[in-house]
Amino acid sequence: MRLARRPSVVFLALLVAAAAMAPALARRDPTEMNKAASLTLPSWVNPMGTDQFGRDILSRLLYGSRVALAIGLGATSGAAALGIPLGLWAGFAGGRADGVVMRGVDTLLAVPPVLLAMGLVAMTGPGSLNAGIAVLVVSLPQFARLARAGTLVQKGMEYAEAAAAMGATDARIVFRAILPNILSPLVVQAPIAASRAILLEASLSFLGLGTQPPAPSWGLMVSESRNYMYAAPWYGAFPGALITLTVLALNGISDLVRRGRRS
Image 1 (cartoon, rainbow, N blue to C red):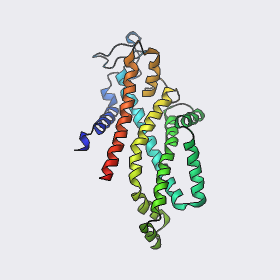
Image 2 (cartoon, rainbow, N blue to C red):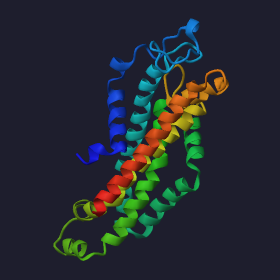
Image 3 (spheres, rainbow, N blue to C red):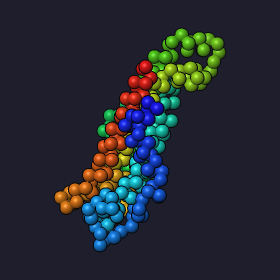
Image 4 (tube, helix red, strand yellow):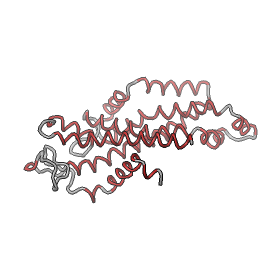
């Protein structure tokens, strides 16, 4: 009940529900055009107005939330699923394996995230799926480094040495003994990584490398609204506000998790 009163939790719960029920909540097809009603003010018929093609902005936001959440949560889950075992193995094995893995991770971290994602999408082609894969690759080093750092500390603890003395396999020591003890920073990192993933997907779509028209995307809507900032300021305000609130809510969730695990 205490979590239910947190604004971040409430907002994200509503966003997920709205994305899941987008077909029922959307009054019109998000790609349906009506040139006779282009750039209309918010009204009862179109609660958030229409864009330059007469498409309902609310409908496009609802369907765009599906893209944002799918890439944000999917890419973060994939990055964690790949990065955590990689960091565990590098930290536990040490030596040459650790050096090779972490040099690769450091190489990814040396390139600015947006530039790296742009390069990956440029090689594979624009689109939501390729943008999601690029976001996954960009997010992977965060989890790998956190898992490695925790493993380096925990593998020298008495319980890990005792498990090794009792004949436990390396896999059992890593996943049954060490991993549960390094989960706290990884769980705290997950909402932050999701917020960065959503922001990165929006950036790629804004640059024309993510979701392609006429499919709806928050970043694409902000990009398309640039030419109508004075004629229809609400056009870009709604998707921009939604991106901001979603990122802030996920960061708020991270703070709640961090405080909750400390108490």
